[in-house]
Image (tube, rainbow, N blue to C red):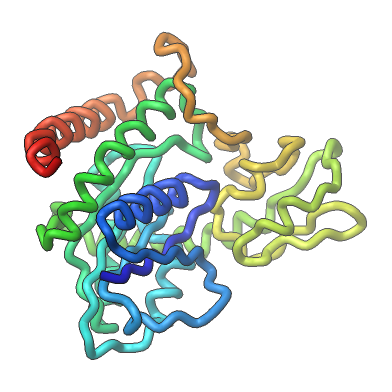
Length: 293
């Protein structure tokens, strides 16, 4: 089986998940190619038996870049099978609606989505998770992905239970696409910019250009946070959401489990539910894994 994984990753979380899926597919004897969005070349889906699609949840929707990619796919007569994986900083039920528009577009292109998975990964906006929490999130995802990958390969379908009026909620929240562009007009740099140009080079939509040694922001921002998160001088102010700015990569090494960040009660029940359900799935899969060895 030959698989193509198309993914968009703002600051690296979804890329880590995509790489883990690729690793698992290859470990199971399947070919796998990874393609980061935006694509640098045209890809024919007819060359692949299975399609993987990964994205970070933006405003309870797939990123606009991902929807544009789906719309660009030529209608297929071979009806390839696809699975979706998404990452988010919190495991709230509302996130389940993020794939509705994407699935609808893919269906019209002859692509059938049979599996959906969500993995909680540390925030790149709103607030910074502790090193311990980031470590637990990634370790949990690394244990779940082999299980989910096995279901995909074995044809075991898995769909997320959608919310009542979920499509309406998702449609309403897509107002954020325009809001992201508007907010991008208020991006600016503080005086301690070191003129490295990293933000301009790495912007996925080419929204940043260097002028007189300083970044200049356009009106096509998609709020992926790649520029501010990776800024070595932590000098990019992200407009109206600057109070939510997070800077610096996570090490994903374990930290002090007693460390506090002032957000211990944020989505507390949702996190507890996610980790409990993940533990149950991991434990229930162990007999199958052991018997397969």
